[in-house]
Image (cartoon, rainbow over all chains, first blue to last red; front, side, top):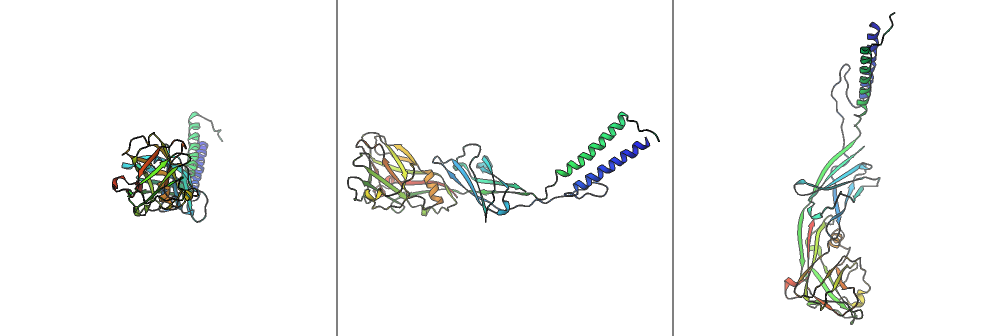
Length: 129
Length: 222
């Protein structure tokens, strides 16, 4: 029983060491106990603006978001077409490609037909590494 | 030295220690978020309506094959006729500058309104086609042959009853025109059947009754 206790103690010590080392990159770990930490998440832009095209019936055929900073290259842009009462009328996403001075994304599918007359705004989300 | 015997209790303890070690490593792997970007924002659109009518905001005329160098821009009516040897084509365009729309805006809907001053004797299907090069009220048939035209925007039927106003959807053309003010120069209205001699007559911007003049109603966003 004494040896078993030693073996278990050793195993737990190894486990604690691995856990502390693995988490150290992103969390502040205390020497004896786990403590709280945080990691900052930055943004590659501060604003976006879109234009859209319509067919002759007035339905949105595509949304174009231009002037995206090159720092956002490779990230995923999600656009939601917003209507009255902040209702989501449709949404789509695209990848910000590699580009020169500024990037653009064109989205052509929104999960259904959306009348431009009902669109009162756009909501954006940009995520990526 | 005593031998270590594996009892169910000891196996359970070892298993718990192993799980603890694995959980510690997995936990760290999912928290490496320091280099990620995340941003959310929104944009609000402004809606409005702009109605264009009258001689200061529109230009119209018609050209006739029978008099290829004649002009008709000062008339109070404009004609559309299908006769293959003596066609008439009507033209109408609008100046959008008074709407003060930025090129980042767009048309939600745009409707061309034409008043049927005199109806054809038989129902006709007329075609509305965007004109891609500039023209003026002194346009002739000969000059009209050299203009560039886009794909037909829409068609509409005239019926045989005068005194009605047609509402013709031209949203796609006006949306493009808002984004690029030199994209197009109004529309040609013609009868593409190429047979018969029925004439359709619309009121022009020179018509004495303001309510009968060509009108463009734009519901826009910016």
